[in-house]
Amino acid sequence: MKTYEVTFYRNLTNRSGNPYRSDLETLQVEGTDRRRAFCKAAKRFAHDWSLYEWANLADACEVIEVRPDAPALPSSGGRTIGEWRV
Image 1 (cartoon, rainbow, N blue to C red):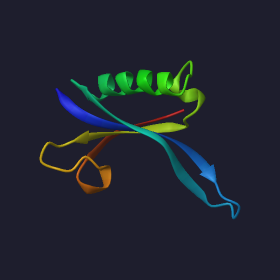
Image 2: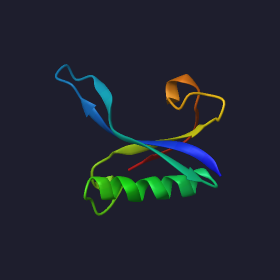
Image 3: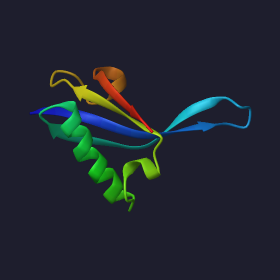
Image 4: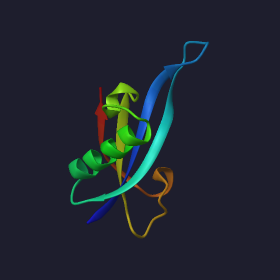
């Protein structure tokens, strides 16, 4: 199984009208592929936030495969392999 980090986030706009991404939660899950990892993370995210489904709070999510030889942070070694948007 591979390890993935799934980050759920909202797309917001500041007072100046500039868009920015606000991360809500990053979960590390294991799965045979990115789709299964996403499904596992979506269930945990919905449970953690007491939601019916993840899209009720987050606008999108990013799935990153964590390489065993790299640190877990996406900015320092993960590989982006998918993104889901509402």
